[in-house]
Amino acid sequence: MTRRVALVVFDGVSMLDVSGPSEVLHQAGRLGHPYELVLVSPRGEPVATSAGPELSGTTAAADAGPIDTVVVAGGDRLADEPPGDDLLEVVRTLTAQAKRVTSVCTGAFLLAELGQLDGRRVTTHWRHAEILARRHPRVCVEPDAIHIRDGRYVTSAGISVGIDLALALVEDDHGPDVARDIAREMVVFMQRPGGQSQFSTAISTPPAGSGLLRSVIASVLADPAADHSLPAMAASAAVSARHLTRLFNAELGTTPAKWVERVRLDRAQQLLLDGYSVTSAAHHSGLGTDESLRRAFARHLGTTPTHYRQRFTTTHRETTAQGAGLGSVDT
Image (cartoon, rainbow, N blue to C red; front, top):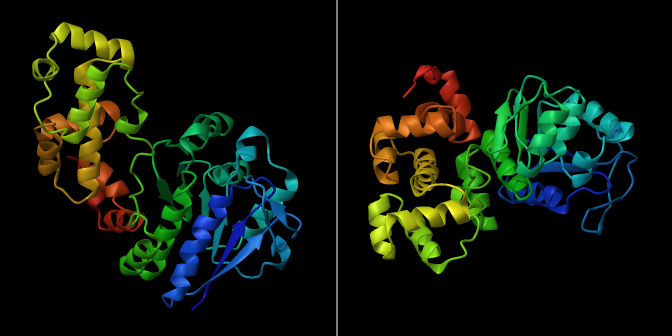
């Protein structure tokens, strides 16, 4: 059975928001699981991407025919200014009939403008999350997630995450083995789990000015579970604990202990998504005990390790876990 996917495009659309999902669906067809991709624009005419090249071969929403899945691509203009009525009408028309509605990056702004995301958990590119939340206060924006499923809606971050979104859709339709084969062919991750952070502590930590601090940071990131107490780090750097604390405060705006805890929490999140138990994740991340892990999750993420794993292992497993009644487990 060929599934028909409508991909909403417009002047200023991000090219990768279009090409990433398109290539995943093309690869699915090569493996014997065909998708028919229909590019839909407000006037059924070619559109200019944000990178410059045009996308031709588009059609109007009224001529798109039956649609199984809608993918609303993104572009910075959607966060910078209210969308035009013609673009909103395209999305309204397509989503009225679709079984599954998805967005890449700022495509969520179009769905939110139509009220379709009111009361739902959604995500978008981290840079635009605050704008989305402020403009649409009825939408529950979770800025850190890669992609989130809520009912028939799946929203994703930007920009390359459109590939992850499409792999998740293929997994829903044809199972994880097909999605894995496509990921291998495209030489990308086999689905970063939906709850994986858009930016880890390692990425968001600003470059340290001093070589001494850079060495300490590299040591922690290389092995979060090692002994990274303040005395141990200071001894390794051959400075006093007081001096090392001053360096962390001056260059990173935090204390050594707080920064190490965030690195370990990042590691614990990934271990949980990789299938480790709560106890193993606590041990291998360096947080130590189940209770220490639970407190770190509550303090920084406002949830529990078990709930986090159930919600974000993959979009497919999240649905399975909820259907099995596992949401009541609270570790």
